[in-house]
Image 1 (cartoon, rainbow, N blue to C red):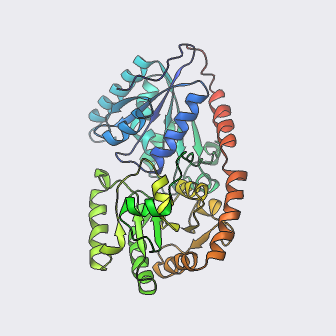
Image 2 (cartoon, helix red, strand yellow; image 1 turned 45 degrees about the horizontal axis):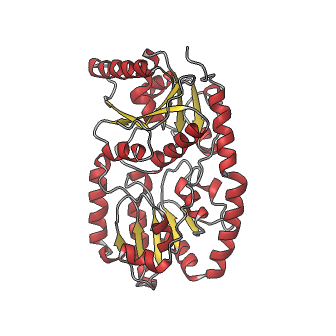
Image 3 (cartoon, rainbow, N blue to C red; image 1 turned 135 degrees about the horizontal axis):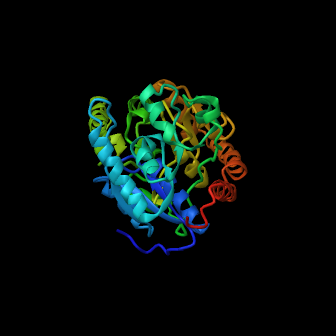
Length: 385
């Protein structure tokens, strides 16, 4: 367990609950949130799912305390395992004197919300995806949440809860900081084993059904007919056990379509500067997406964007202004939009310029820090009970 975080006894600890065993946008954005909370003077501890050591290491590398917690599904037919896990979570929260838990997404509240209420802690939950079809049981579990935080207007609108429960703020994600080292295209291509002259499409998305890799793979095959040298660089955690079957299915589809030589899977990248320096455009083929925080990182690195026209993505990609939108589940349209960016430098330059201004005006760091400060201040956490 990391212990480098300076303890401020006058400030209550915020517990951040991570729901997934691998690393994707949820984990990276939570890291940025926790770093912001630390900069504002709050103490923090990060709870990760049992066995999710890659998630633990991400936060310990940034000097945050961490603790594993058990993930047990609630069941009306066999409630005891879930209640036992909830009591274990409650004991840990009481021992740490946690007064507020911040769930990284609804699934975290699903696992930890009751334990938090047992411990007398208040519960807030980010909502990172639209949930238009929550079951009665899922809605019941969310009664433990005192306040929601939404990452886009589309997500707030779609959440399947009464309107009076959707009055939380929209706090847009923030792009990651640029690293001091500036990578050259040539050295970055060598780093990933990519041809220096090939057009390269970047993909940085969790290998899960939500991201619709089959559409991306089929679009790649169509694109390769026009641009035979095209490559796809996929920065994603290939060890994610939760999505192991989906990862295998995606690899099988790459083989079936004859696209093996066109796809490169270097795994999760702690330093994304190499990734962005190596690519010519960034593509996101999601069929469901709360916002698409990697798009913000793409703008920060001056990378032109293609994303599907779903949920919160159009709040980042204003079509034909800050990037190009593609119809969901349409390999032909996705391939055509990617090809436009790869073959029309004038278009790419125009979109990059407008996207940079949009980033500064809507998704800037000062805005994020101010919103997080105001949100946490509303819970009066500065003095221990």
